[in-house]
Length: 358
Image (cartoon, rainbow, N blue to C red; front, side):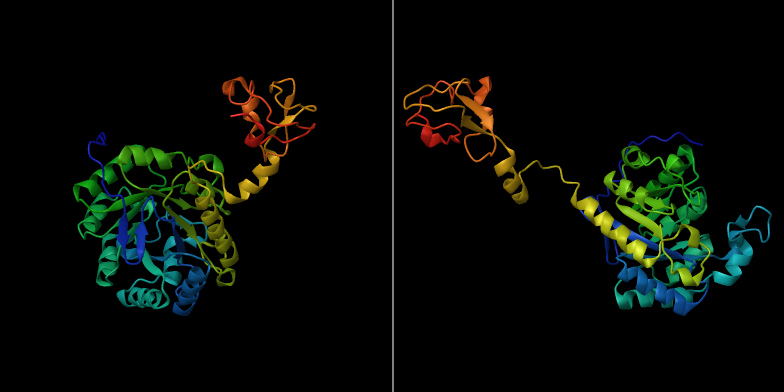
């Protein structure tokens, strides 16, 4: 592996494709990974697309396999949690231009962005014939540098997942993408199914941003969405989460959210985003609480006109509707303490500046 030096930033503050804008001043883009949950049924696929849109997804994403180009048939290593990869793909894969053109057209019709992950060069070429707006690669393709370069030469934005990869392998992939000057971002990922919290290492989101000068998202494979919320709080600009309809019994069901869960996840993401401001101000609702929760300068006993205010005759008490109690501190010496009362003041009077000599 070649050593990586970040001597030039990606210099892409935003990525635009189709209806999507990804950037630090935009809400996190939510990808519903529909994968092959449709099991090769077009009606089921369209049902998934509709459900994903209704649940708040910005993107409906599929997968495109060309098994004979992508893998060695029934190799003993080609196992999946739902069975043999080769057998699963025979049952569930949409592998033609016509199928993906129909999926994309349906996404366009109902108003959700279509996206697809190709798993080999041939699959990426099929998607190019479909006139896709962007590409998303799986973690397994990160070290397939010839494929990455082939896709990058198409000039369309690429979201690159980084699961099960070393930092040196990610360095190589980023170097290829920068050499080709293609808009790209990384999707931090843990290729465990389901993903464990201990191995998520979400701190890499910021480390990748610093190391590669690009935007970073999070591709989540947990059975819940706690990692998603944490990732957004840490700056992830894209969230990818598997989506299913349980009765379809898709191959990724174990790591997928159903429509109700996904909708709750999206709502939680939007709530967290609204909580990430960095401006300290008193909100309108806080003003109400402040009026009784803060303390005022209050007379500790009856005070006569012309009497000098001091720490002996003034105390801090609620509510906070008068002169702030901070004026009883030495920091504000001479502002209140040491001044005289302009009238007689009974005990427990909340002082206002009208009670104090000029």
